[in-house]
Amino acid sequence: MRQSSPRLPAIGGREGALLGAVILASIIFSVASPYFATAGNATTIARNSTELMLAGLGMTLLLAMGSIDVSIGILMGLAAIAVAHALLASVAPALALLVGPAAGAALGLVTALVVVLGRVPAIVGTLGLLGVYRMGVFALLGGQWLSGLPVGLTQLLSVTVLGLPMSIFAIGLAYLAVWLALRRTPYGPHLLSIGNSEEKARLSGVPVSKVRIATFIISGALTGLAASFYVANYRNVEMAIGSTLALDAIAAVVLGGTSIMGGRCSLLGTALGVILLRILQNGLLLMGVPSLWQPVVTGALLIGVLALELPASRMGEFKARWMQR
Image (cartoon, rainbow, N blue to C red; front, top):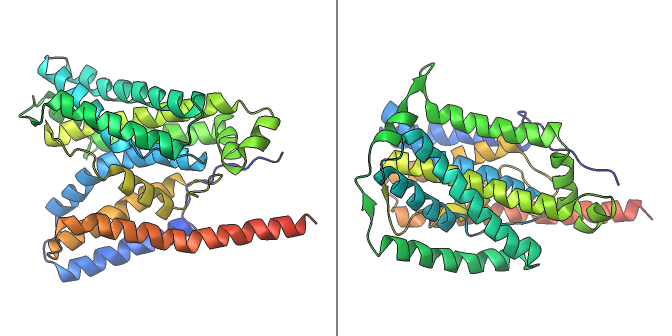
């Protein structure tokens, strides 16, 4: 079977259009609000993009594999609680930073056991886990916030290198590591072949179960790392943590060109999708649109992209089948 290879993160096609949309939205909001084009607001957008950048990276892999995880928001909440308790226990900030990815990877393994080994459809299994994890967050927090956390982790990730905070380099390294795994190891072709057709991938010798389990663990670890950044940025953990993370991640990833039907991904597209989504949310808030409308905007974007994408995908499948006759 001929296996697809991941798309290189280069400006072109969907990525070029997204870059244009980012520039256009920035110009519009700069004209509409005097507070948009400021250094402070740029910092706010960057800080609000941190967790979504990492969770979106994991979601990119899942969607490219033809799977999904709608529980990542609550998963991030559980990992954030673990990081918070590590800080409260006076664990060194560098070690506390690693608690998030470790907790996320463990929870990703639980998801993999349910979905892969339990043979439960991903959307059903992760919806079930969403309820379980939500109860876990409530039980661990006891209906109260964890606030006023130690500043060690915040200070660690605020260290600047070449004028940029450490968090930017950490996110860049995460994207680079995933890009190398997709391009330079068998993992990339295996992942996309599963997304194109799991049955054909299995017949061609791809270790389907191992790749699927590994991908859920990787996604969990990335979301756990997002939890560490969340705690560092806000120094609290509230009951509603991550409530819109799954929707935002799916919207940003699909907007970036990763197929929700599997078999195609774009890491650069995901990053640009996150930036565009956060710019839209920030700009609308500055224009006086209540934050309660943010999920509406995100959902509308997702529906709009899918409305254009899915008919095109079906047309492509029809043409391929016709050519094989």
